Image 1 (cartoon, rainbow, N blue to C red):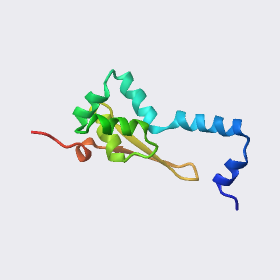
Image 2 (cartoon, helix red, strand yellow):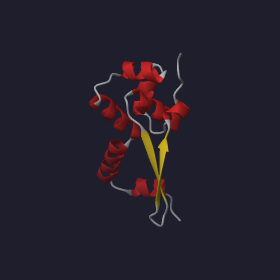
Image 3 (tube, rainbow, N blue to C red):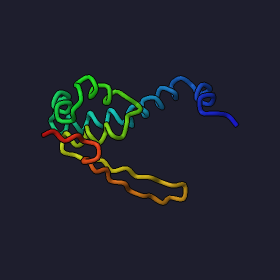
Length: 108
């Protein structure tokens, strides 16, 4: 059985470049940044509302792997929410809605 890394290395360079481009388009951080901009919020505003630093928001927007709790806090800070869809091989799906009360620290 050949792993994906080995197969990828055997692909022509232009195909690898196209795959990398598509991967970049699907990156979670990029999607979060696009939503933030559509909501006309700055990284600094998200940071203040989410109890994070602006640097942390920037890292989230450029990361491939982000903690779910950070995503919930981020989206809650711009008035949004998070729903995760769990899919099985047989095509069944289960939606999980994340309550921000669990992830967002309340300030007095």
